Length: 385
Image (cartoon, rainbow, N blue to C red; front, side, top):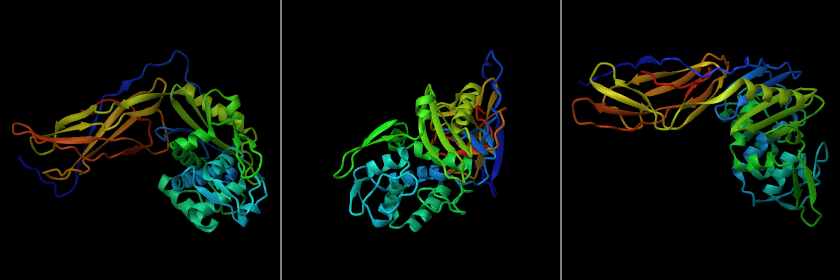
């Protein structure tokens, strides 16, 4: 029987709730920290595990350089020769490596100087190479930030020196850091402790990463420090244990390393990564509304999300019927993985491939487009039937 929907028909199938094994010890409580704003984020799913004033814009200082590096890596190769102009050579405030007008530097070396030494002159040189001017680079920074989901921040410069309109939120900085850490070149630089910087026509310069958490915290592998008088101490930190990476952002944190370590400790102790769906796992097979046709909903990718230890997890399938025949590439459903652990943030966590068959007749299977769903809850796994 053919079915036709004049309007979108949505129905929900709630899966049984399945508990994860509870730990013997009580779940740790969130730490008390001195930072004005803070976020703890799961690097894989983007889920926020803990937050303190995450949406309040503040001067981000040199944590800005994460976005600068991301844009530079998207536009330049490691071997791209970057010409040094007067504006970069005249930059001597804060950290700098002493670039001289007329020099040509490999983008790779400028990126190491930018992210490890927090060099303002390297930030300017890279910005001019990418966009032609600092003003145009700021336009690109804001556009790229918005595409990443960082919508409450505004950037005026590639280095983060104080400007009353150069502001970012802890949540937005976590989102930007998460995107940057997906770039292998970026991840390699920010976990490097020391680097010998080759200087054109001069002796090499030894760079020491400004992020001392790399020496002090087990599993630390990034990302960037920042400080100006108007911002106070700022740190975006990351750490990986047993293949699971967390990101901690602390802004205006007098004891930034202690605060970041406390957040990371809490995340690793209170949560654990759970496979919500295996690649190819059938999440739903059942009838379409109004007829004998059936859908089989299959997860396209493996989905791993953080779940509070001892929390129950569940899957909700939503199918959208739009009329038969269903066309290849048509969006037909979503999967939302949730648990009892509260979260106030939305993050894409998974999706479905759907196939359509006619029961009792020749099977006509089709594969359809992945649709990534978003929810502010912890996502878990099981079938929605």
